[in-house]
Image (tube, rainbow, N blue to C red; front, side, top):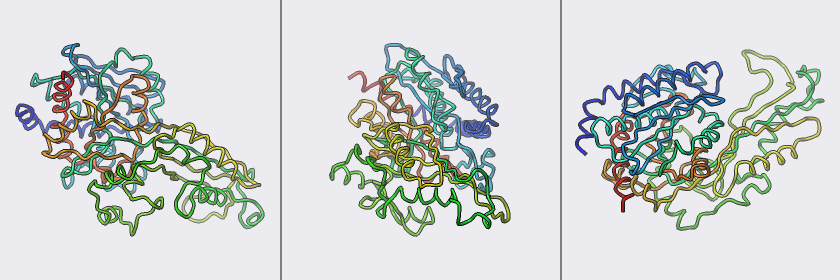
Length: 457
């Protein structure tokens, strides 16, 4: 609608400035030293919702970081869209690899560089600004409820209780999430599924203290050596995961479904060039798109132990640690896979060491229906804004709360993301395209319009 384009055009500089202000707040949920900043960010999000036109907005305390909730109810008889996002961000480490300060946003080559630029402040703020566009032009077609949490990056541990305690407040017809990506602005897409997650931490203990590697080396088990061997054994020569029963419930796609998935535009040479790698590597018998979308994985996210400071220290360490995540696909479940991992990892520990396995957060894989009114509304919104029909894709990441929404609130989710896989989320120099940000603000009102129209029929 022209009135939306005009309002966006008149306010685009302010919309960008307001996002940059939000990005300056280091709302790192994983590190307690940022607790005050997380609270400050929640307050800023609440104020942004009120300024955008919410009838009310509030900060809802949890046992961890708070959830921000706002709503704009124009007519209870109309459909209600529940928008979900998160204002917390990943830790910025390693700081030395950032080309500019992670919380000092800069714009270069059409991109905003800052921690949280894409994941998820930039994307959730599109919904705040889209609400403003609709509210200030009196063109809202749906009721809007917005829930923005502060613990997504640490597992959303308190969100389940919040959903249970606020079912009436959160009553809606669909959940709309922009915490995912699209292929490109030239080839827009909609994600139709996400992988689940089981996140583990392992600890291998050898002697009761760090030892001199000359005096004891060769006679006492080295926990780091042992841990590396144990981890290496978790994949075979075909990069197949060796945990017994791991693939037992994996949902296999048909040849036709695999072909459709691989029809999405993908340039392997560009992929390798972007990552500066000579070749890809993964489970034998599957393409890169399949490996990252429809197949489960196991990856080491961090490993440490012994002396890692400057210079040399000839120590045989007492302990070694690793963090390991497994991405899951339908019909795997996080707790079942975590139990399998624990049993197997403990069983392969050699004599001379003790092993401790801790299950951290997890989430379930989801597949969203493509024949629903909400999906069709999202597809039509993208086609209207981009001039192209979106390509259905499977996302490799995890948003554990999507399954939680369905289980607790009985709501399906539409995944309408505007980020790119190359935006370096969770990495140094995270970025988000300025054009992607504006395009999201332009597209979202069309979703509300079409969802309201299609819901009547």
